[in-house]
Image 1 (cartoon, rainbow, N blue to C red):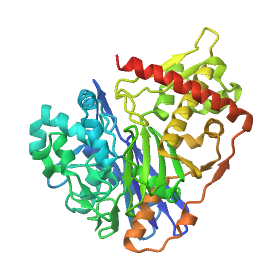
Image 2 (cartoon, rainbow, N blue to C red):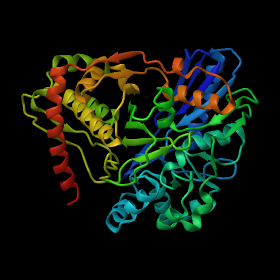
Image 3 (spheres, one colour):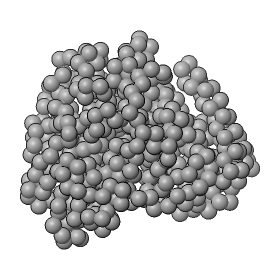
Image 4 (cartoon, rainbow, N blue to C red):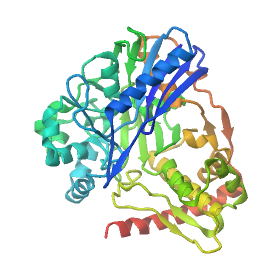
Length: 474
């Protein structure tokens, strides 16, 4: 069997596949997030412990030899480790907002734009550059004690294999990697005031690093490949590799990716270019902070269960009876397709006549408009695949197809883990049929009348968003 490991923000998963790409089994464990005063942190020992636990459960459930394992996980954040890959402090998550004042300052003084023009990466508070700069100002002893500033999956790879600290070109894309040379841009390090911390940036393995397992969770000697991180891994798992084709990941964050061979560092600084395992090929990424977390908040606040969502969407007309939601609930604001650290959610059109269905449908429509904005900015011209937890709602998928005005290739299952296996197979020279592994489970077509209605609604959404952004800057 082939094992894909996906170390997510709130859930750690391991999936087993056969040689034809059929998913045999999945094991998962939740991991905690500690939120306080704009800080979002994770316990690295807990995360690693749950990785080992899901691997042990998976290999017990499917008692077949492990041909190879691929590793992926959440991107961004800062995971400070010592020489053995063990934490020197809790991990700062990509959701963390502590560095928003630094980002505000860099937006004002031109540093933000200068970095984007060099790397194609628009910094946000939870990206490594701002977080490392914040730690340098407030917790320099933590940086002194660290051997490397890793990403989540890199910490797991080091612990599983005993290899030295390393990362890959996909994770290194934000914000230090020059996408043309596929090496660190030392000028960017200087611009962020981190020149004397340059040694904390892990070596970039190009192609991704490989090693044998030490025996925790996987049999000793099991071949493992480290990377790419979850966004490009999902693109691989959904078969999004041809220029112009796109992927929408409806998860905790709403990630829009479009494959491209064109590198354009002009225009509004936003999103990033993710380097892939093929030089000259990138993913133009718009990973918004908005996502299922916004809907979860509305469901929790209104007392609606997840299994009620489809019924409420079906019973509520398009346009949600005039209720509108700008779904920017993240404490660190928004990062794509624009950077606005102080942007917050807004609900309008609500009255005593509004019901739970109106609020739920308006939130789903608002998330759909945000997705359309991101995909347009990323340059979508071809087919669109969709994956993530949101695909479990058939009503929401129909709504998304209408809001986006295009067919959706729905790819279900553990898409990131699937992409991690395909990347590992490529690295080890194991022949797997990528087309067979990435076939969609369904295609959802938009309704022409509703699509036309939502095209008008999208223009109204952009107008409301422009006003909200102006208010956020006051």
